[in-house]
Image (cartoon, rainbow, N blue to C red; front, top):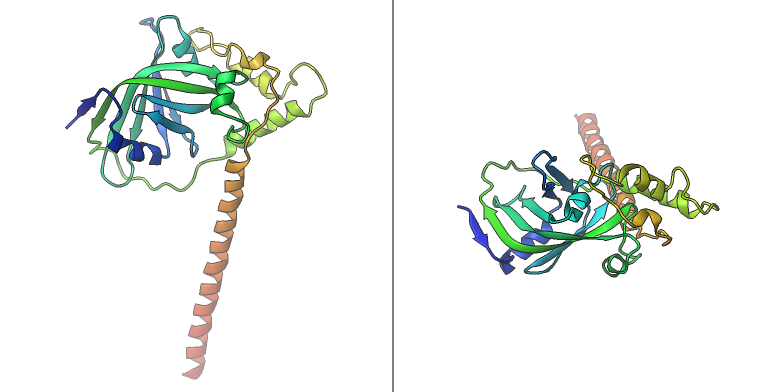
Length: 246
């Protein structure tokens, strides 16, 4: 049965921190506006500060719906949903209001210093939780987690490197700021999105940890393949030997 709490139960926090993905839902105030639901991932992107505060690193995308809705005058509503795909079934919703701290602001730098920031990171979304809902999740199927994708990080790393290596003052055509100016200035309903990040003169720096994990993952797979080949070779050798003695 569903339960509601005024704050995040302490017993729920370890489970929240173990989830590999989450969803955020926002909507404009106008009845004709589009409701947005966005899936989010990346290891370590979601943080629980305390029983009433969470935040996540917002990686750039082709849209800017969440940030636009949070910044709409009189709005700020957001719901975060997490769901168990292994172990006991569970769904958790965090209802709250969100604040946007864009790349280049002091608040962003405090939460995401260069040794923690990922390529393409455009904002930190800080959410004040005023209600928590849990439900059974009996209809949610089991899924096996394999790994986080790295294509998006690689794409934005190329964008940011192009900007860092550019000798011009203006953002290069294939740079990160140019992408923001093309894709992230307003929502599909025309609500303003990014306000300062495209004009920040802060240097792009990032952590290599996610890309390093991809290399480790490939090496692990390669090692596994080598081990499999050795096992197969050994098995074939044993079979051939036994046939030879017959």
